[in-house]
Image 1 (cartoon, rainbow, N blue to C red):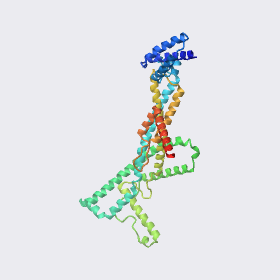
Image 2 (spheres, rainbow, N blue to C red):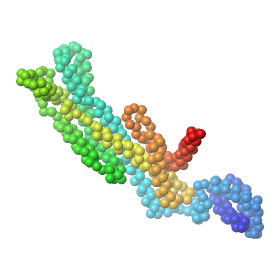
Image 3 (cartoon, rainbow, N blue to C red):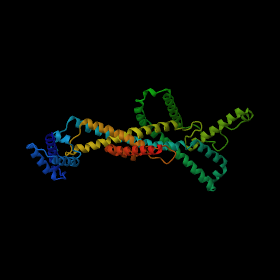
Image 4 (tube, rainbow, N blue to C red):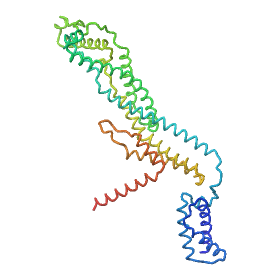
Length: 406
C-alpha cells in the first residue's frame, strides 16, 4: 500500500518538478534527490516511511511554488510549450469582450450625461422665471420715472444697474431653458431604455399610473411648444397704463368680477412685458420639471446601482481571463469556468456598490460615480478582494452580536 502511495508521489513530484525547473520556480533543490531516492525504492519494492513523509512535504511546497498551475493541469497532458489555436469558443469570447466594452462605454456616457442634466434640471426647477419677471415688471412700474431718467441722462446708476442685471439674468435663464429642453428630452429618451430593461422583468407592475404619467409628459411638451411660439402681443403700453385700462364698468362690477378683470389685465401686462424683453415666462404656464426629474432619478438609480456595476464587474473578470489566455505558461481555463467567473464578477460589482455609494454632500440624492465603477472593475478582476472583505465583515458582526448578547 505504501509502495503504491510512493509511486503516485513520484509521478506527481516528477511532473511538478519538471515544470518548476523549466520556469525557475523550484526552491527546494533537495527535492530532486528525494524524488530519485523514492524512484529507486519503488523499483526495488522497498518502503521508507521517513522518505515518504519528506517527499509529501516537498511536493506540498512545490505545488505552492508553481501556483496557479495545478497537478490536474499537469496530469491532463498540458504543456506550456504547446501553441494555442484559435477555436470557435475563443472567437466568441473575443467578440463578446469587444461588445462588452462598447456597451459599457455607451452606458457610462449615458450615465454621465444624465447626471449632469439631472443637476441642471434641479437648478432650473428652482429658478422661478415667471416670478422674477413679475418682480422686474413691478420694479419697473414703481421706478418708472427713475429708470427713464437713468436711460436718458445717465443718472440714477444704482437703479439702472439693478434693472440691467436682472434683465440680463432673465435673458440668460430663458436661453438656458430653451437649450436645456432639447438636451433633457434626449437624456430622458436614453435613460428610458434602461428603465424599460427592468420594466420587462416586472411587467405585472404596469398600471394605469404609467398612462397617467405619459399624459403628464405630453401636457408638459405641449406647454413648452406654446411657450416657444411666443406671445403675439404688441410691445407698446408696457410701462404706461394703456394696456387694458381699468374702466368704470370694472370698478362698478361685483367684487369677484372686478378681481377677475383686474387679474386678466395684469396677466396681459406681464405677457406683454415678456414679449418686450424676448423671454417666455408665462405666469399661467409655468415650467415644471417634476416628472422629468423623477424619470432621470429613477433611470440613474437603475444604471448606477445595477447595470453599470454589473458591466464593470464583468469587464474586470473578462480582462482577468484575457490576460490569462495571453500567458502561455498558464493552462487555459474551461469555458464554463470562464462564464461562471464573469457572471460572478458582475454580481461582485453590484454588491460592492451597495456598500460604496459616496454621499453628495447636499440635499440632492447621491448616485454612484466613476470611482465606484472603478472599484467594481477591480473586484470583478479579483473577486477574492470582495469576499475577504465580506468574510471580515461577517466575523466582525458575529463578534459584535456575541458581545451584545452577553
